[in-house]
Length: 140
Length: 288
Image 1 (cartoon, rainbow over the protein chains, first blue to last red):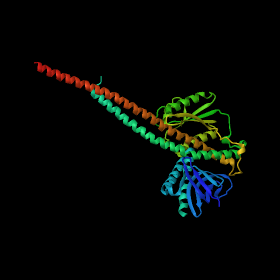
Image 2: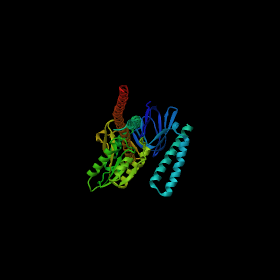
Image 3: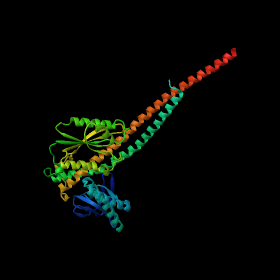
Image 4: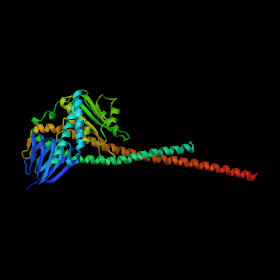
């Protein structure tokens, strides 16, 4: 049976390159997307969330803060804005980031600072994506 | 002629300076290696994003491009100038400032100019010449994508709103350790990769549709371009500093040699004259 090669790149580095992957689950803007080997060529936009890869029964989780995904010839390429391995994420730091983002958002709303509002909202989405990833990895 | 004490003081002072310049040279050398690695690490993303844009442009067709890619007459141009926060980097920042001034002067008078500056050095040099519409001086010399997000956001928003119709970026390209070449690249309107109509691939599914994906991808492409330029700036800064500090260390060594020679000559002259003194004194006694 054919297998998938999954590459995750962020502007800063190549985060991941895995061969022999049997399933990729990604948060597309149109909903959760599952990619099996021999998938048709596809380009889609991703939302902040969890990227999951399965190799048989074994699975791995990564948080991504949004990006783009391309499938071509059994190769899945994810252009992530930023990505982290669930095992590398610190729950406390993600929680602290979420609280800071909520505070910034309230502050920005009060002062009607559009730039700050956008930044704070993005920060909040990133923090939530990390927390969800930790949660899902823990549940397996 | 300086006194021996004065010479000794100067030797010590130059030697202290040399220790500092040598330390800075070593630090710059190791940071330069890290900066070069960062430039390398950013390459895969750049390759993939260009390929994806190519396929999207092909699928969208030139007549249905999103507004961000549609050309319009240029009435206002913004310049994004990348410089360092710290000095002691040889002629790096001076060259960038000179290129900026030349570029702006070469631009037609009918075009309204705005200048956005990254780095304290550029801010200091350009604020007397032009009105700066934004200045960023808090970006580290080991930049991350998050660090530069406010810069790209400003440019993307400004372009979409129509504050300017063209954005040009000026930054030092890291050619090699001895050469950093000022480069001028156009960020907006976006320079699309060459698309060959023949190279049409098998039908691709786009979600939601090619034009919307393309529209979302363009800001990332611009961000990536600015990020890579910031990395080039970082590598250029460290290598220029390393070369400047090596020259300073060598100059200090030469200076010390000269001062030591003068000091030794002076010391010898004193000893000789003292010996003559003693010898003539002894002779006078013997004669008496």
